[in-house]
Length: 283
Image 1 (cartoon, rainbow, N blue to C red):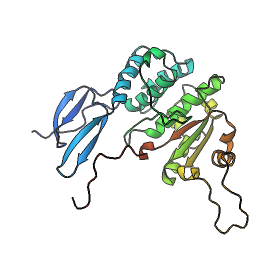
Image 2: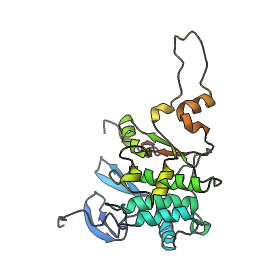
Image 3: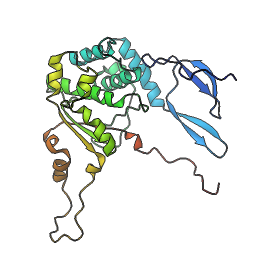
Image 4: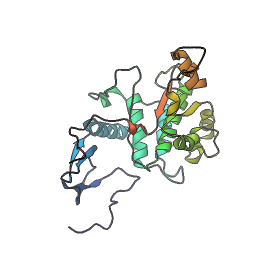
């Protein structure tokens, strides 16, 4: 097999049109036309083999979003349509958005605003709780912080324009996986010197940009979500922290909002099901 001169065979600004196909040992084999199906790989170090597990739901959603995009985003508000047009305009900013960034925000808008016929037969499994959880899976270095800015812009501008619509909110709670990332996410505050809204020109005009300043945004480290523990040597026994007290402590000014958007950065730290087999240290 001839060694390829470069593994990069697609433009980051356009939908992938080809991909590398690998053999069972993980070696590059050949270039295949079409986008690589979504999935993940499981490696067996005992015999140095791999097997791919398809993410079937993702592979069903991708063509639906593509069809919805080609149809002109039916069902979206005038605000969302204006934003999508602006974000796709490659002349509107110094560096155009990557395709993966645009597809990420499009998929969220499709799920929330798209017409029923474009989502027919699609069901997002949940954990049985009150909150609907939607995941955007993006690789390292693909601009997740910018996508968070796109989400906030989309939600806030729609919430302020259509205050009676419950699918939008101007209150956003961003959960960071650590203190270092929390510091980096400060750019999500509209008043930050290097905020994403100005750096990436997320708003089509200055009037809409000023509306972003009305957003209620809170960026906190996930450790702040832990319930308070009563000191072991405390003389006064206050008991467990109530739900109301927890909400006020964690959310602060956001506690007064009825609707809330929660963005969990780097949520991939959640674990999938246990592996089918375990390998002992002896093996």
